[in-house]
Every structure is written in C-alpha cells, then in structure tokens.
Length: 374
Image 1 (tube, one colour):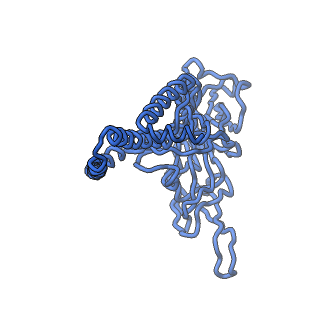
Image 2 (cartoon, helix red, strand yellow; image 1 turned 180 degrees about the vertical axis):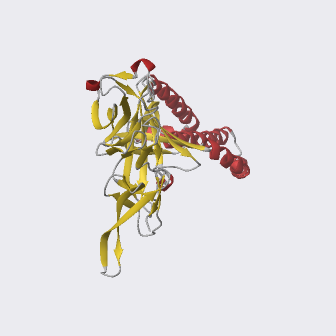
Image 3 (cartoon, helix red, strand yellow; image 1 turned 60 degrees about the vertical axis):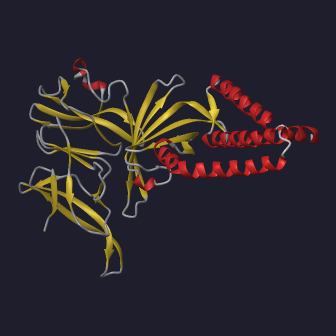
C-alpha cells in the first residue's frame, strides 16, 4: 500500500491522467444503463482533475530542471496567476451559474425517493429522476413538476407554492398520467388541506359528441329533481384522487325516457358534495361544505342555465378571525329572496370562548355573489 501511495505521489500528472480517463470510461458505462453521477460529485471530480493537472505539471517541471529554486519561484508565480485569473473570471462564472446551475434535492414523491433537479428562471420546473444513492441518479425523467411562475426553489421556499402540476413518464419517457395538486393554506401560510385532481391525458375532460347520449342506468345518480316533464340530474362521471369526484348535469325533457349530457365541462367536487336545483335554470353544487374566504378554491358552484355552465360563488364577508365558513343548509328561496344559511366558528367575547355563530347570506344575482343579511 505504501509503494502504491509513493508511486502516486511521485507521478501525480500520470495518476491524474489515469483518473480522468477512468471517470470518462465509468460515465460511459453508467450511461449505457441510464445512470450518471450526481452534480456535486461531478464537480468534485472536475476540481480534483484540475488540481491534479496543475500540481502534476509543476512536478514534471521540477523533476526536469536542475535549477530547483527557479522552478519553485516559477511555480509560486504560476499559482498566483491562476488565483488572480479565477478572481477576474469569477463574476462571469457567477453570471453563467445563475442561469445554468440547477440545484438537486433528494425528495419523496408518492412514497418513492427521487433526485429532483430544479430549473427556475421565469418558470419553476422540476424534473424527478430515479435515486440510486448519494452519488448516482437516473438519466431519464420519471416525473415533471410545474410549480408556476417565478424564480424560486420550491424545496427551499415552499410557501411560494400554491399548486403543482405533475406529469408522469414510463421508462421510454412517454407520458402515462397527469395530476394537479392544489394547497389550501390558513392565514399563517400553513397547509390545512390539499385538492388533488387526476387528469385524463387522452381526452382532458372533453366528450365525444357521439357520447352525449347516455342511458339512465349507465351513470351513478347523485341528485335528481323533476320540473313537469323536465328532469335534471347530477351524475358521477369518474372518481379522482383525494376523495374527489367529477360530475356533470344530464337533462331529460320526456319525463325520464331519454337523458342527454347538458354540461359543457366537468366540475370537480368532494365525494360528500351536496346538490340542489331550485328551478329549471338555477342549481348549486356544494363541494366540501366549507367556504374558504381568502383562498382561491371553488367551494360552491352555481349554474343559471340548467347545468350547461358553472361559476364559482363569491362570498363577501370580512372577519380577520375567520378563515372559512361552514354551510349549514342548501340555498333556498324565502319570499323571492335567495338565501343560504352558514356558520362561523369565532370567539365570543361575552362568554369568553369560541362558538359557532349562525350567518344568513342573501344573493341578488342568482347565487353569483353573496352578502350578509343585515
């Protein structure tokens, strides 16, 4: 072992050359099996190779020259010049690194460990590769995550993340599935819930015109209301992740003999959602029973055209101590005024503790906007 160490010490340039050739050969072998070194280890190999080259050249000159003092002075000047050169080009290196450097993180996604490579400039994109330990990773993208606009690292500044779109690939980098994950936060920025929706990669929630005719027994009925010869029905189309379902509205104008899809698009609600049609045009789908006041979350959908299109209801209620409202009952008409009963869990200073306070909201535009009934 001592002899080997002495040979390496006395032949640094040759050892460095062998080290470089060995790593190039090793990388070629790894790439055949879709494996490569992690970025930090590649940088370490490059630094060792450069230092070995510089020291090896100095050693060769020292051995070849009879004037050892001159070689020592020359070597010192050479090292000083290299340091000055590095200082001069450092701003350029930093500038290039700002645009080219892609930080790596070891993360867990869907219960599997990946190496996540972040590319964040105008948009934040993350590629997930197979994890093979602290030194190695895969070469093919297994999952791609789109975290939205901005120039941040989502694994360092997770508070900047509101939703993520994931695209999953097979071993040939062909798309096999997609899903979207939306985070619901409280006033302090803590995640209190998340909404997960699995996308149809083949049809993206669009329907073939030939599929618009649906037999009643072919679709699970969630709610049905009859108005003379017209029957309106909320039907379940598919299940989604996170206890969500995709629904739409079917209509029959012949007393239930034939049903047709009337909705232009699917809407996503929880599997505990409640539905109601108050007349042939006005209907509601209440997703979770909670109305988040400061989050961009569709809690209540309203339709004014029998279910053809849906919009999200907007609640105007200001209370710094209330994050969300609970829907107590479905919307209803009282003396031609559209109302909905809700409750807010808030502090009652009179009794010195928290309690549910009943709130009645009214709408003057058929459920699009709601204001507190005074």
